Length: 122
View 1 (cartoon, one colour):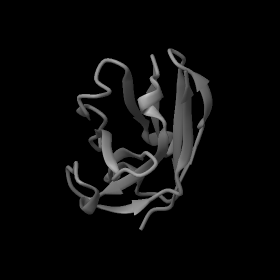
View 2 (tube, helix red, strand yellow; view 1 turned 180 degrees about the horizontal axis):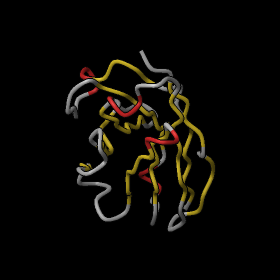
View 3 (cartoon, rainbow, N blue to C red; view 1 turned 45 degrees about the vertical axis):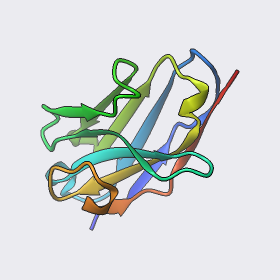
């Protein structure tokens, strides 16, 4: 029901920062609960962060609390993930996803982007 496209990934040294963007198409972006997930080589897809429709409430995995910030701009149909103090353990493909309900599990999301690679060296 909504098309998503991530961008902003790349190669960065440990301790550096990146900002990921997820652009959504359509008129109903503000009706979706949005989340970021990541999948490292050989690992399961895991929850990173999520944000409510209004952007008032946010949720984070313990591993990224204090380092990552999720935000959204409904006027631009875009959700962001600001990643600071990056660690090699953050290396993964990062996915943007949309859900109809407050959600933390991958199965609760109905639309997914194609993913963007984040690689942290050192």
